[in-house]
Length: 338
Image 1 (cartoon, rainbow, N blue to C red):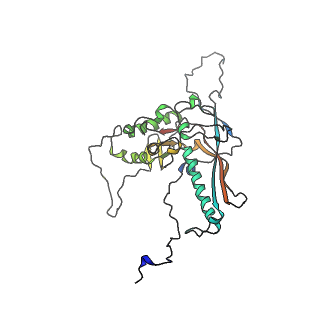
Image 2 (image 1 turned 60 degrees about the horizontal axis):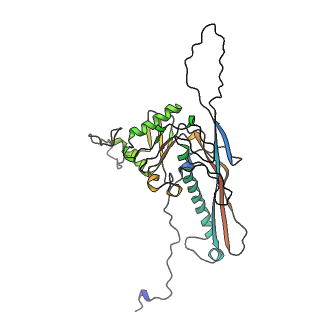
Image 3 (image 1 turned 60 degrees about the vertical axis):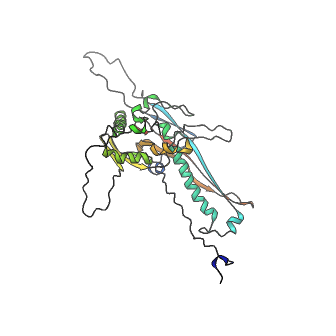
């Protein structure tokens, strides 16, 4: 009897598809608006604000002898481009001869995958603490834009671009830097209140949050706002007879100072961009979307160099700025022990 293990010439059974289970999105790229095309490596722009009210009771009979400029509060800001590049290469035999399960064209498969990886690099750079860097001219270090973690800082960041003026920096209360254990609902409210005091804006903010921080919002309802001590009363839920779902997910957090729409992200304070896995899980940015923009000098573009015998190659590149028009009303959650 011929046993299966002794059969010669058995065909290998390869499924005609490839499973890619990584579905992490890039919400900063998706949600924040696009601004005007940058036409130089560095973009200069201005912010302005109103002067604080002063006592105003002019004496009768006194001539006007004091004049002030309405432009005295204007400050300069700058932003820098970053050039992103990804490449792909497939040998001639791998492309033209090999019959690969799930693929009809190796290079055509690599290009969109590399474009997704580039989008994630843009997202991770924007969600990082990286400072603006000027091209060193050494063929190694290129221009880098300033990440959200550096834009939202209570102290001026020393980098290649002009430091943000102290008058438009976020207040220290808008940046949570205490330990994770003290990240109560009251701490979040304090940051939101501080941002409102700076701008008066109580419109919807968009929160880009790591997994642990998103989870924290879900359990706020079980605690006294100023602590992480569980309330003595039990949870009470009203459900219809037909209900089959039980949960405590929070996608929008409402407060006296405006709502925050929460978006999960894996890319804040990423471990390959100066952060760590724990930092990524706990980092959050609450942004006014009208004060941020992606400025595209060039959207992702694919190039295919001339074939020279060794293999088929492709390059993808894009040039963009990640820009904050004015950081004074923005919020960052960055626990010191994350």
